Amino acid sequence: MPAAPCRVESTRFDPAAPAHKIKERFELTDEAKRLLVRVDVWSNSDRLPLQPWIDTHLAYLNNGHATLQERTIGPARVPALLADEPRSCQAANIVTAVFAIDDQVVAVTCADGESHAARSAFEGVLSSIGTGGAR
Image (cartoon, rainbow, N blue to C red; front, side):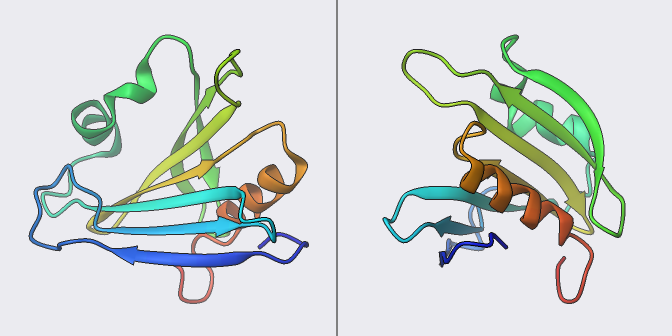
């Protein structure tokens, strides 16, 4: 979690929706209600390996502009794909880590990779994967 105060909002979506639809979303915002980090959770009941799941449901991450790298996250050393989309004249630097745990795929997105507060919150969330009740 970020050092600065933040608010966490959660939204649950229809669990019967198709696999490509988000099932849960968590948003961390700062005191001014600016988005720091978004966490999206999908069902992966077929337990597809991560890369085929991304190719099927999150193909936009492989758009030719983002830098893609493999990384392990959290004390559980969960394998993840990190997509770092550079800043443009119309959008902030977006960084997304995608990983699979059990029958779920999770995407943790840093709303602005150039913002210290957002980057700190993003790294804090990633470092918590596999601790306590994290799934």
